[in-house]
Length: 218
Image (cartoon, rainbow, N blue to C red; front, side):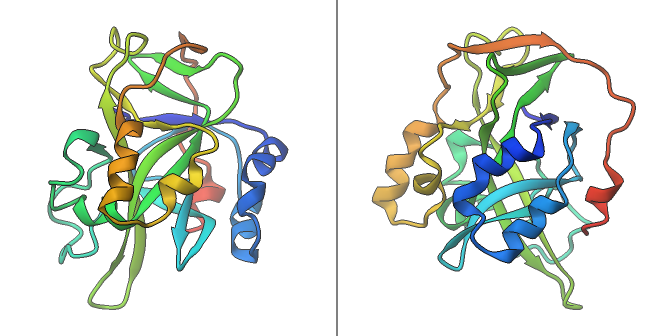
C-alpha cells in the first residue's frame, strides 16, 4: 500500500535530477509550477516522468488511475495502487503495463505514522502506470497509480506492501515501450528492494494537505 508520499526536494536539486528530460518547453513549464510538498495524497496532482510520442517528458497526473476505456469515471473505483504480481493479468492495468509506465519522483512515503526514506535524503523513483481518458464531451484527464510489491524487512513491521522503486540509471529502460521480452526484463524491478541505506523516522504532521498552486494546474 502507498497512500501518501512526499516530495520536499528543493527545486534546484530536483532540476538537476530531471535535467536529462527538460529538453522541451512543456517539461520546463511543469517544473516552474513545482513546490515542495510534505504530504501528497490520492486525488492530487503529482509530478511524473513518462514516455509519450517517442519522447520522455516531465508532466503531471492526477493520482487515482482511470483506464482509457472506462465509460463513466464517476462509477467504480479509482485505484491508487496496482499490485506488481498481477499487472499483466488485470484488465484495468494490462495495457498500461505494456505501454504506459511512469516514474514519480519522491523523497519519502508514509505508513502508520512513519516516514520511509533514503538515509541520505536524496529523491528516488516510485514506479507507476498512467493512462489518458477522453470523455464523450471531449473532456480529458491523465491519471496514474503507484505499483506496489511485497514489503521488505524494513517496511514489513508497518505494512505488508510497499511501493516499487526503480533504481537511478534505469529510468529509460522502465519508461520505453517494448515487446514481451522487454517487459520480462523489467520484472526483476518489481521485486522487493534492498533496504540497505534506507531509514524509518516518525512523520511530522502537516497542517495543509494540498498546495493550491498545484491544483490550479487542472
